[in-house]
Image 1: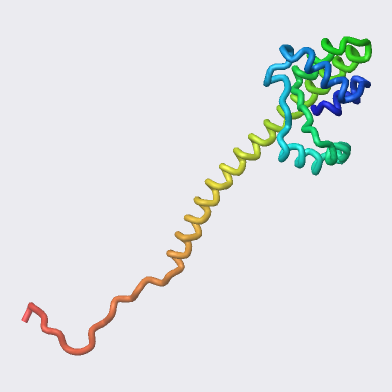
Image 2: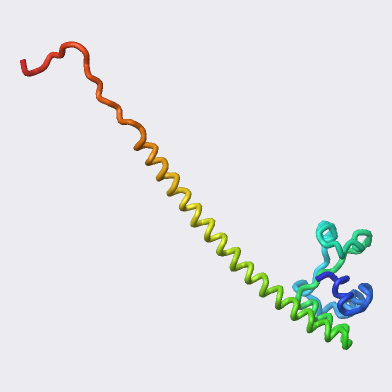
Amino acid sequence: MLDSDLADIYNIKTKALNQAVKRNKERFPNDFMFRLTTEEKKEVVTNCDHLNNLKFTPTLPYAFTEHGAIMLASVINSPRAIEASIFIVRVFVRMREYLLIHKDISNKIDELERRVAGHDKHIRALFDAIRQLMIPPEKPRRRIGFHRSNGK
């Protein structure tokens, strides 16, 4: 989640959220939070309509993982932050469940594609064999004229 989204959830300004993070930098290792690159920012703005206001900001936003979003609740430490952290945990749990369900479906589709690909090869071989059977056999040619036989 981006810093601006979390600021909305925690009902504070993005600048205040980032200041709280800077004051507690040791609580936010790289696997809790990272800064988007310019390209990532452009992609996020392009794909997420609610982030259009980021298009014109000169600063690159921070992105927080599930653990970073929860850590923010302890840094901000307000009743709203506690309520929001519970909400965030529930959202991430649902997202994880959703991804697992779709991962299962994706795995089944991949398996089906592998099976069909194998069937395609067998069907192609079957058609080739049928085509071979449809080709009329060559008749032996009769020789014209007299032939000498070894049997006098």
